[in-house]
Amino acid sequence: MFELPKEEQAIEKKLTELYPKEWLLKTAIEVGFVKRDRKVDPVVFFWSLVLGFGVGLQRTLAELKRTYTSMAANKIAMSSFYERFKPELVAFLKQCVQKAVTDMANEPNVCMSATLKGFHDLLLVDSTLVHLHEKLATRWPGSRTNSSPAAIKLNLLMSAWGKGPRNVDVVEGKRSEQSLLDLGPWVKDRILLMDLGYFDHQRFQEINALGGFFVSRVKSNCNPLILRSLKKRKGIAIAGQRFKTVKDQFQKETVDLEVMLSTKKPENENRPLRVIGMWNENKKSYHFYVTNIPADCVTPEDIAKLYSA
Image 1: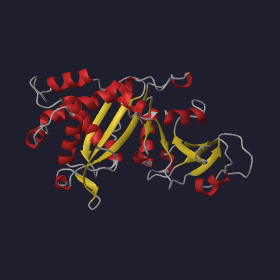
Image 2 (image 1 turned 45 degrees about the vertical axis):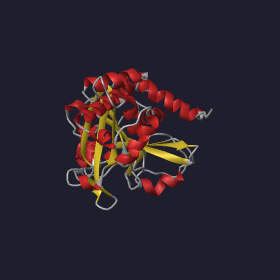
Image 3 (image 1 turned 90 degrees about the vertical axis):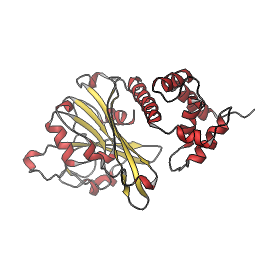
Image 4 (image 1 turned 90 degrees about the horizontal axis):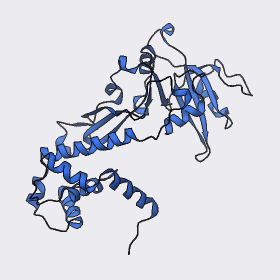
């Protein structure tokens, strides 16, 4: 008998725990995707959609139908399969996404250490791009007219401390991540873990002004002015130099710098930030982060753990 590798078994176990057969069937009936005298098995239909797609893959409806037929015990006419792509399917899939987001938010995967108890919440900000058929380009324009003429962007803001999802937006694929982050008073005393797509000097200062905090990876073209090192270090003085000029001089040490990022605002409206560098032994390279969390609140090691959790 064929047996999946252990890693794939773990993935299969995790997926089936997240979406039990009973829950899928109950939800499909509740939203009207299938009737009780169903011709299509909603559980098999769901898994054929989920497993029929992947990063870099494109599938036609005919290919998805063949996937469904190979997984199901009964055959289905092509016309009956096409008829399942209706508003009720959208409602069904929305419930499935909502369940995944909620379950992820409720997992105790990020523990509040004593140093983080002064913050109200830890929020994850991320987005993903889903490519669509080119005929949908008018309604859902993508970021590139040639390689991605039609796409949607899923933007997610959720709590990592089990306080539930905050916001999910579905917009045109050509929209930038920066335009999807609607800042406001809700940011106060909260930490935002931001993907590189949201990296923006002006946004960082806005979060600062609102009393919020953030952690982001440093973009490769970012070259802030170093004000001082927050850790004692040997070697040449780096205060007053640009980050790119000195970053190759670090020798696997933990880096903690006070820097100034350039923005269009006057200098007196900008606030110093921290650039933190942690050596990754596996990749033999540094991971650099930028944050406005004070050095006396969170260590560089804590920042790296927060971002990787």
